[in-house]
Length: 78
Image (cartoon, rainbow, N blue to C red; front, top):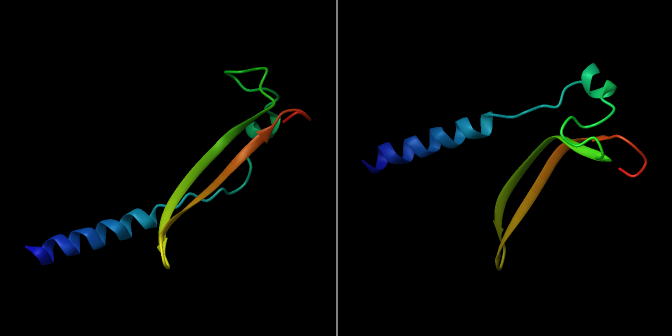
């Protein structure tokens, strides 16, 4: 039973790490966009945002929060 649980957790963690979003090219629609559809007064907005938390241990436990994203800036205030 322990072997089955260990194998399940191992395979599940491999599948989770395999799902990676690559930015690729910026679309023409993103370039042409002049204002946010929900908030026309917005100076900038996130098009894509993803966070990842990892834990490290040297003498104490620490967590590392990494964020990657794509931001569309509409004007100089943004």
